[in-house]
Amino acid sequence: MTLEQIESIFNKLQEGSSLSLQLLKIKVSAKNKTSYSTCKVNLSPEGRLTHFVGEISDHYKKEFKKYHTVKEYDGSADAQTIYELPAENVLICDEFKTLQEAISKPDVEINPLKFSASAQLIKETLSINGEDYRIKLFSMQNPITTLRHKFWESSGIFSEIDNKVLSLRTNLDIIIIDDTAYMLSMAGEKLFNIERAYKGICLQKVAAVEKMRIVTDFELFRTCASSGHNPRRFVAFNDEHLKKLENSDDRRRLAEKFGLPLLEGKFDTTQNGVSEKLVKLLCNKGMVDPFDDLPMEVSSPRKWE
Image (cartoon, rainbow, N blue to C red; front, side, top):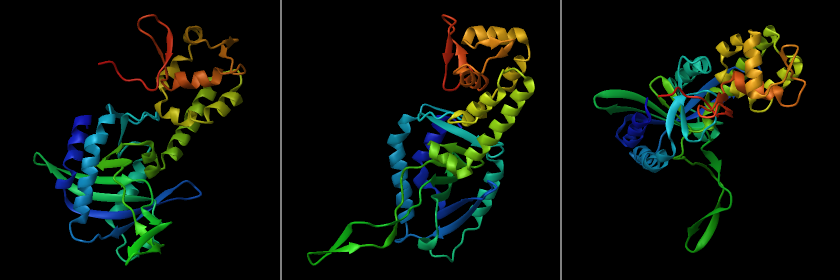
């Protein structure tokens, strides 16, 4: 979807039908498997949920201006970008299916106050220009909270309130439209345990670099690649670029352009910063300025249009 199409959905949220509110629990097992369970929540008086969805819509009529583009999720973290993840994306495909199953079968018996929620979820069906969209709105915080230092007044006396309450948020972290997820903030990664996915990709790609024998000290490179923010960069790993580095002439040309020292034809990862630079280049963070031919670091590349 384009930015304009997503915005039009936000503008019409209050017009949706089949509205329902659920609490969502996310569990990650010791083997990094993700499971979901949901609990249905009923609000009173009737129509209160529709009114709240209208507040979300009004909030994003102003908030949406901060977004400049929609792009496929690549591990970067630009607050002005909405990141798109279709259900079949390898990063979320298993979790997406499991999540949908949990949403379709919410627990209607459990007391929501005893449900250890990870997020709030509102689902609805929205019709725009004769086309129906299945909408799911997620806020990745537990909406059940215990009031502290809150008091209610009766006959001039204030008494402390210490009950648990449902505190809904108009700020969203991720929206699913039909079979595509759109991350509005990086907190949306928690819904699909994406950290697990990109760390797995990192391990695979680092192993591919090892087979190429293009670095002097592979263990130093492995340590750098798997540390800090580097694992998420491997979502954008460019296999074609790695393949080109098999060629010694291409390695020499790249080394000269981006200041990567070579030792006997290999990138000298014993020198400070070389592993980090190589990770960036392999993950599409290194480009060349078209005017003065100087090397540049970019947050994420986009095809020139």
